[in-house]
Image (cartoon, rainbow, N blue to C red; front, side, top):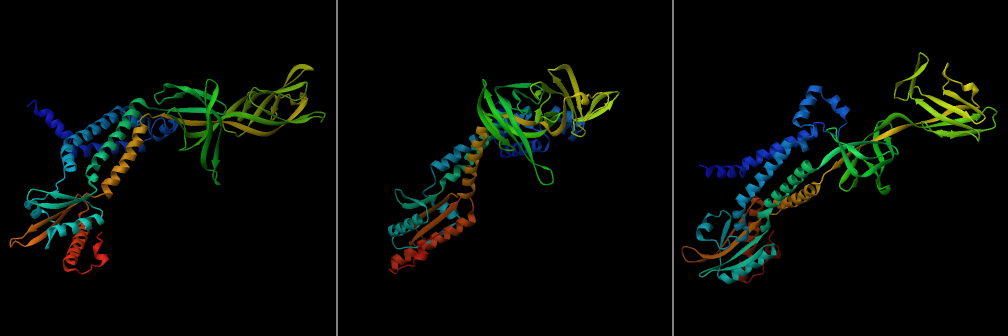
Length: 477
């Protein structure tokens, strides 16, 4: 009983039903990973808007918001892989015997049982076999003379490799599953948000933790292109890889065209405004009209207006409101902007507060040696990057390529076999028995077999009668 239990487990794992069920479960759960919003590829706010708090807690608890890194998904891939290995090991010895030692000399019982065959009268065995060998060679078959103690015959075949194609497909599945397991165990996904000119060497993991990179990534610029109706067309970011202060790599990324460095991929995931000012462009005019210039200034920056006067951007409110003599930000949207400038002169130690637009009770615009007019507002923006490290991708892609080759062999190559044996009937008359078999696509093979048999019969009759045969009848499909 103890010895039979491992055997039952072994047979169950290698069973076709077990493999099919496990593959169906893998496909269903993989599909769930594409339908259910996944962390961190989806913004946390978007996930919270898509699901109720109770549903989100449930999805997080069972791992459905990170399917491909969940422990149960790794276990399922391991079970499928074990099932594929077990099935291959159980069936490989017979398949290898069939491949390595094909049945070349058909016995009488085999000839009677083979459904696809044909008999034709001949006068000379050797001449008939030479004709059959020549016709089969023309149609792409590899022929071999089979010599036995009391008989000789002809064996021809093509595409024997297709018998082993199923194991190529099995190997490709194992490579794909191996890549998935490696990614789940050693890979990670994270998110990174950068403003223009900002750099970082840490990324945010889905569980709230941080992952330290061996290099830094910097956002030099980013932008959004829109369709004519104003909807976003594409986002782009110019990224640079830095190490020890040196720039090693620079690339503009868009969706589905990431920057890859040391196996870490940076995908364009989002883009938006931060609600903060990047640059305020002003036109400054001296009170006496002697000096006019444009000034581009950022928060906290100081710009020179002349040799004696400077201006500093003390504050910028994108949507301001005044309450109780104080200025508040109503929102981060650029709806009703206000700028607080501080003008200082070497001739006077007094700092003058200038507000654009003028805010009664706060502004001292009349005392400023310069008047200011807003020319352009450039708001700061961020680029959202999805960051991933998937060390198993080489195995996945190798498996995909190998599966493509294996499936091409499975579907397009047919193992065809034809036997040609001189025999005698019950009255002792000499006949040529021709039989054939194929491992798939039987209808097409039967048509090919009929063409080959007709070509052989026609050429034998021509040879025995001495009449020239039409060339069209000598070429079989």
